[in-house]
Amino acid sequence: MKTFQTNHLPGRTVLTGNCETYLWLSGTDYLGMGHDEVFRSFLYEGLERYGMHFGSSRNNTLRLSVYTETEEKLADWIGSESALLISSGMWAGQCVMKIIEQVIYKSGNSQSIQYHYAPKVHPALWGNEHKVYAGPWADWAQNVIREVRESPEDTAHIICTDAVGSPLVEAFDFSIFSSLPLRGNVWIVVDESHTLGVCGESANGLYKSILTLGKANVVMASSLNKALGIPAGVIACDARIAETIRSSAWFSGASPTAPAYAYALKRLLEIEHYKTQSDLLITKVEHFSNHLQSPHLFQSIPGYPVFCCEGSALFETLLVKGIMASCFSYPSVNDAPVTRIAVTTLHQKEDLDRLAEVCNNFIS
Image (cartoon, rainbow, N blue to C red; front, side, top):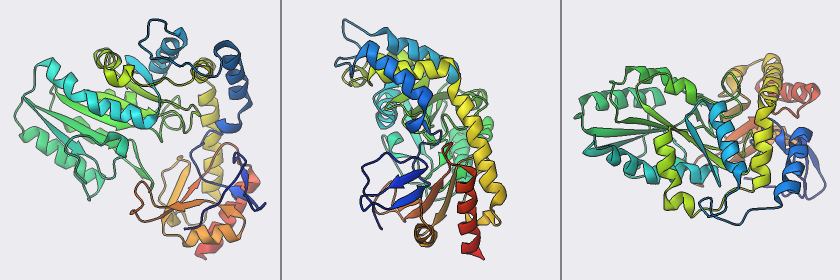
């Protein structure tokens, strides 16, 4: 596939290395935080107060209170007992997967553990006995429920899934897990990297809605470097899991995110800026969707900013018309390429009208 170089941060447009300008409609900066002036002002405040970085373990003798203050804001926003700032989303997921068996066996209620990996679950949640499930997500979920019901009571179950399908967009109906038997040793571990900041009543993701099903312990791992614009990750969970992770070598041995970004995140949560931007994003997505004559061209979810289709034909057509989407193999180089369009808060109505026009002509 074609690749391009740029020396500029893309926004609604991108300038490539050969001085060509395209309308940019990809990436994961859904809320436009890369160019957000409110975010920029808070980050400057954080840099003035905390400097460029904090070279230390989070568990060192001297600790910066901004981390725990931000974690408290995150937990309150997400709807979890606790939240932990981690250096990246990938490491947030892997940290959970390295610790979760210790948490389960410490409880003393389980003699064995069975893993259940959803179709195309992100590598951040790959752990022991990772197996690829090739069928539909709903079929997989029904199989999980059956296996849990048929298993001995002292077998713990770890259910690993993304909150939304990626790169091909797909909505998952988590209410299916309300049919799980009521046990204390069933765990749902969910990656919310593409839903946190975009979905939920307060743009706060799906954690709370999954937790309120009441049939499983829920642990959420997510990148903050997509919609929220923070180069870090987060783990949301109950207090006992958070304490186990916090006291582990996996947490203590990892460098923290820059404190200036933690400060900016705290301030953005305090003024509910992500909710404001998420509401704006919804209007942009609705505008494009309403002008799209054949929504069947894409795999998409109502109100969700990503539109995908298999193959590269649409990508090439858009490129000729001065619109750059993305088309590459993900997450493995052996995966089939997907044309992916992402609407952001930075796009103007005329941008979305132009995009819809090209897509409509592509299928006519």
